[in-house]
Amino acid sequence: MATEILMPRQGQSVESCIIIEWKVNEGDVVTQGQTLCEVETDKATFEVEATAAGTVLGIFYPADADVDVLKVIAAIGEPGEDISGLYPETSEESDQKTEDSTPVAVEVVAEVPPSDLRPLTSGEAVGASPRAKNLAEKKGIDVSSVTGSGPGGRVIERDVAAAQPGAVSPAAQAKAGAEGLAVPTVGSGMGGRVLAADLQAVASMDFPGNVAEIPVKGVRKVVASRMLASLQNTAQLTLNTSADARSILDYRAKCKAAPEEVGVGGISINDVVLYATLRTLAEFPELNAHYLGKTIEQFENVHLGFAVDTPRGLMVPVIRFANLMTLKQLSAETKRLAMACIEGSIEPDALAGGTFTVTNLGAMGIESFTPVLNAPEVGILGICTIQPKPVMNGSDVEFIPHIGLSLTFDHCAVDGAPAAKFLSVMRQKLADFQFELTLEG
Image (cartoon, rainbow, N blue to C red; front, top):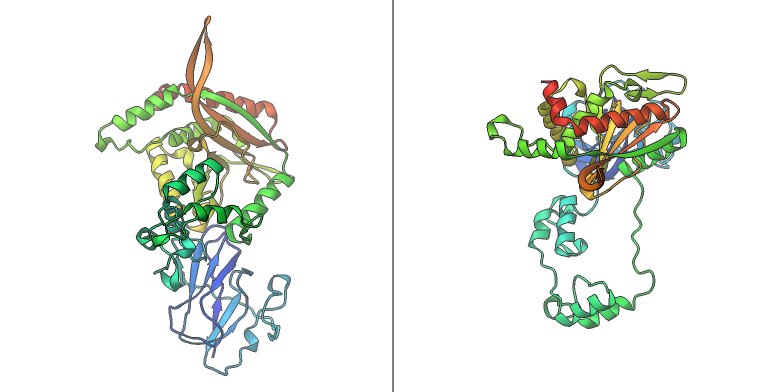
């Protein structure tokens, strides 16, 4: 009897997965444990492995199909076996199934064991890993010209490290700087040396030159739809202010200078602001809530989401019961979740259930911005860069470092005055951070 290959359930909050790439074709002979395909949720990417050895008798969904969990996506068995009873039932989501399939309803009751899933360090089903691409950009190397030694010929970091970009002649450097011309990775000179003539060839290219068409799928597709839905279905308003940053800068300096055994050297400015946010939310429960249209859910505890930039795109892990943590515990949990997102090992359930979100663009020099709500949450706080701000001190002007704060809230659930008061209290807690921390013990 043919073996069903199911779309695995990865976490209780995951309802469907997108098939990124099939690693096998119909008719291929596979072994138990061999990777059949890569699938992606809005949170992580995984490999689906064969649960039995045999021949791939059918692949029921193509790459880029969004398939409900526990649906049969393929069948493995002996050549010639009848698998007509395994084809998925006809629905809008499965209209891309093979043309010769016979729609037959099938009831799926079995869960795929966790052992059938293997997290990937990369969320992209492309020819080069994110680390390889980053190194190639730094070295000025065209990653498409590098021969890959990874699985399936994938270009990995060590391949780029071993590659050498073509040298650029002084004349080509001068011409590129004077005329603003792009410098190709490899030129026509000896050993790929880029000559001035190579720049003329670049300048004479047909407008607009090569254009890469990138399909919107996976995490990018999910983030795009959620952000659009958030802006369409909520009344978002953003308030901007700044807070005196001298106290938090001084506290950060003391943490760095503290003995290693104290364990506070890793506490960052971001950790401090997250901690101050939690203490401020305790006084404004209306912002620690979900707006559900006919009802508003206010939460006793704060499950704090924070934005993380990863090679696969934006992720928002959730620190559960963050309001019950000390600053040191909060710092450690933030770093653990952020690293899991970057490495691709984050559990999907760790990216759900947030009641308030913080996003930090300060390290990129952003002075103010408009964060988009992570609906149904009613508030999201943006952390901006620290910069000197002129402040009147009697008749004199003193330049004092200030950290920017941008609060977006849903006006359907919260009025402007409570949101403004939240920022006012937040400013005070940051300005007096060391004093506030002493009072809390």
